[in-house]
Image (cartoon, rainbow, N blue to C red; front, side):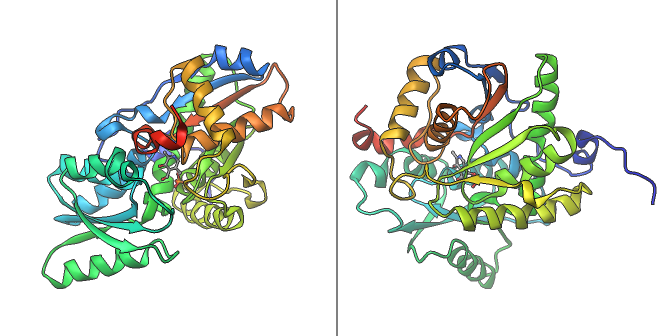
Length: 340
Ligand SMILES: Cc1ncc(COP(=O)(O)O)c(C=O)c1O
């Protein structure tokens, strides 16, 4: 077989997308946070600035996944998440924009005990604003079973639903997320550097799967470092590898699963519970760089990065990119817990 010499962007161009996310997102220096921590040179990739419905990392995945829904003639999108899920808020936003009905399974009980602002503010408020129909379900530990049950129910009633997995994490979502690497590759080159690492929080694993596959081709010297925020690092790593294998098949990019790195120890006491390190990271990002991180995902991701910097993982003359994956609406749902 002839060698496939296509670039990452050329491979990604073979996959149709809706174009609802505002791309490329900026790659910006963080000089004040860099000075505060004493190096390496820190950059932020503004995945919170993807636009629609308050933005976030899921819009990139949804651009591809919901293109498939539209081309199959779906009239309804079905997905789910916890009460303050950023993923389902972005699903609701895209569905509203496309004029599709949106049904969301809302899991209760993964975090206990919730406050009244957790139940009603932030993403919960936005889901209602974007017109989603919410179905309250107890959390059992299985992310997708109740979403599938709702899908079957809507189908049996004669609808044309489209199933969007928890976190929009599947192989096509990972392909969509590999677009971030194509952007970082050219933005970093324009600024004259190759990142030593891209650090981000990882949960349902599709984001990291896209990053590792994209980087295997376009940024082979760049380490992808996922900070586990689910307090389930083995499960997260296994899911990253599974989605990345499928996505690498779709993009025809070999990748080495031995290099998949999920860092444990920064999730705090449990998923969704911010601890002192998270709160420190959120405050530093706000005060020094005017970035609004969230208490469940990006705040823990930055807490992990700060810990690795304090362990001297990188030299001062290296460049490290922090992926701000979004989630700021949840700040308002955690106001009391954060004491801000
Ligand atoms: C703000 C934010 N960052 C990061 C993630 C993690 O991405 P993934 O689920 O693809 O691992 C999520 C997932 O819900 C999120 O909402």
